[in-house]
Amino acid sequence: MSSTNRDRPVVIALNRFEEFLRLHDVPFELVPCEVPFFLVHTQAGFPSPAQDDMQEPIDLGAWLVEHPAASYIMRVDGRSMSGAGINDGDMIVVNRARKPKAGSIVVALVHGDRTLKRLRYVDGRHWLVPEAEGFADILVDEHVEIWGTVVGVARKIA
Image 1 (cartoon, rainbow, N blue to C red):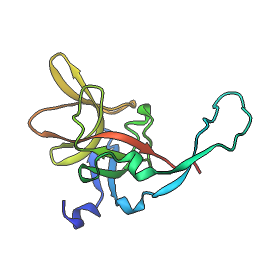
Image 2 (cartoon, rainbow, N blue to C red):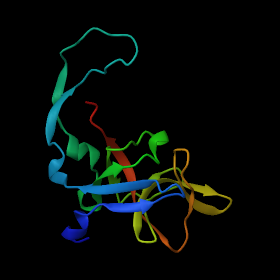
Image 3 (tube, rainbow, N blue to C red):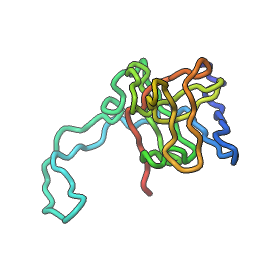
Image 4 (tube, rainbow, N blue to C red):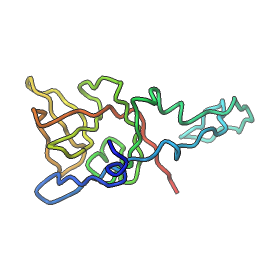
């Protein structure tokens, strides 16, 4: 992909209501290198006593990206995968080396435009299935190319 294409957002009409999903490439240099990594787990239920156990720093880029030469990061613009926990503004890590299988979330090229969907196998056929109301399923045929499997999601809370 040329650098001029990487800087231009791709817009895909997904249904009759003209909802759009835009995927933007994000350069790897924007992924932080190292941050402190705490050995203890944080409770999501009842509070637990704080501990000062800290492990060596973690390289988030290395943790999220298993195969740098076959991976890329994209920013999501749209809501068709909100049911899978992937929201508008999130960044996804896509691995082209990981073989997509039924149940995987994939980036696919449909008639030359990128989209993000879950790959399903139903009645002997593969489908790209959104995880939000109001979006149509897409039959995987000769006009569809799977570009990679989503292996990570990053989001800023505030």
